[in-house]
Amino acid sequence: MIEYADVVCGLAWGDEAKGKITSQLAASGEYDYVCRWAGGNNAGHTVYVDGQKYKTHLIPSGIFYGIKSVIGPGCVVNVKSFFEEIEYLNKHGFNTSLVKISPRAHVVTEEHITRDRKNQYQKLGTTAKGIGPCYSDKSKRTGIRVEDFDDFKSYIWDEKLSGRVLCEGAQGFWLDLDYGNYPFVTSSTTLPYAACSLGFAPQKIRRVYGAAKIYDTRSGLDPEFPETLLDDPELTKIGMLGQEYGVTTGRRRKVNWLNLSKLVQSVNISGCTDVIISKVDILKELNYFKIYYNKELIEFENLNQIKTYVLSTIKRNCELVERVIFSSSPKKI
Image 1 (cartoon, helix red, strand yellow):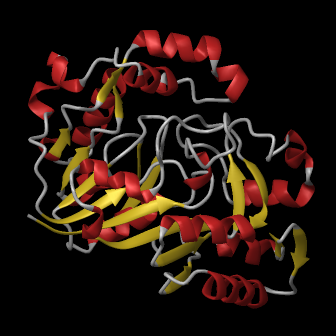
Image 2 (spheres, one colour; image 1 turned 135 degrees about the horizontal axis):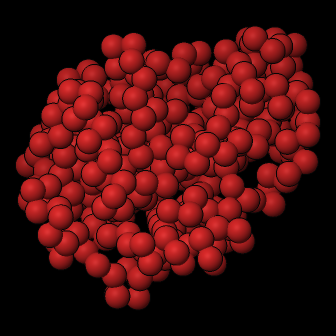
């Protein structure tokens, strides 16, 4: 029986340090499972373990702490990418027998990748990993499930959860298929309620940890993030110092000032109890302190001012939030 489930979700356009948060929570020893509920190897998480940097794209971060790590039924799995990650983790001494895949997850084929590159990569700025076409075939009920693919036999999950579960989100709120700037979105549900697809009731969700940054970034195409942002000298410096390049694609991310109005909205709809805002050290080092709120660009004199304003705005408008944490380290909250 499941005691409770905690959920880590992104509150922006991905790349909000969900991996760091999941890693620190998993390291606490509190959880029996760490699970992914959506997406495929189009996501990328960076974690630090004992000072060493590791990157994964599909396998949940619980693997770094000896915790059962489940790829859920709402995920899509590229065979080659999955086994490359298994080899990478084995090479670094992690116990990959703890990795399990839902038999209901779908398989990304080479044909999906070809379709993606031909039809969606240029038009929508996808990662060209075949994710969209795979989900499309799932919706059309013509896809291939993991249970039908012999390569995964030793990794098939028995679809049972127990104890304390940590759910690791992929992408972010504004890339959600329903809530994002359609069609410039991902192909799955990124909001925390979708974590219940792992096989537990919504009432089991105890805490929702929402991840954001003190500035906004976006990979891929989106009219809300025009190419002109790449020419702004201050935003360019933020991107360079913050190393804003995609973990999966290596693409330079577009940077903009934090849209606090959208953050309040994503916090409320996600039902966050805890909000972790990372990379405040980047603004401090550059001495840039600006945000958008109610479509107005507001400038502050120092870091304390901007933190106080963000904190008070969230507390005033987000009734479920119990804690807002500002983080200055890529390694820990």
